[in-house]
Image 1 (cartoon, rainbow, N blue to C red):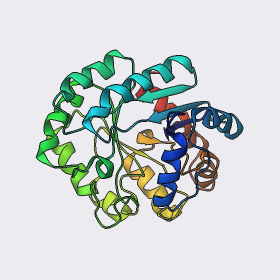
Image 2 (spheres, one colour; image 1 turned 45 degrees about the horizontal axis):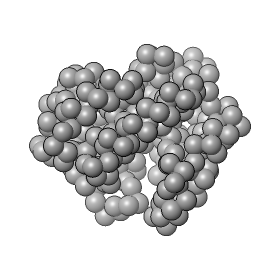
Image 3 (cartoon, helix red, strand yellow; image 1 turned 120 degrees about the vertical axis):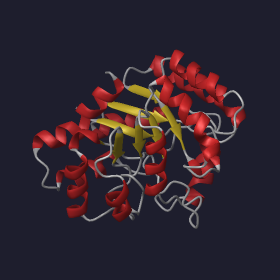
Length: 267
């Protein structure tokens, strides 16, 4: 079984314009056209059994619409799991966290670069407090992002700071703890409780050497690694090939490919 824990689609009404804009920013060519229909077709081709769609509220005013849409998509597609999103500047973020849970969404996604905040900024504490209390897992984009190439909004030491202050928060650091900053991942994050690392974009331009990948997996704990592609910017097929060429055992790979995700999502 293969569960891709990091995928993105966009509503049909904005998908063409959104993808055109993102293609100008992103270095990597997309592997889908960004629509749900094409993504489902590609999932079947790639052998992905369940896709986890991550949504981002780039403005406080988007929370409600994005989360309603995510709930609808999840209810209509048995092989799709959706995360909602809140914005740290939203006045009603605590209420929205509870509403996300009541909608049956499986977690919450943040992207500090697009939401314009530093991960360990104290203004975000009320948001982390609400998410921690909800028991929902939190996925955060970490490390380099081409939309903000000169400013990293979520570095490993910032993640460590947040985890120190919110020890019961289930935190999933996308892009293996911080894209392009894997030495710092080993320094600050490896072995931390309640911290998962996803493999989004690992085969590409900021991927770490295979020996470092294997070292991080085993020192952090293979039970806290999640298969992820960051589709459409990454391909599950490329990610699968990357992991298959490591020295990880079949049992370790099975944990990464699906078992860890099933446990985390209560599937």
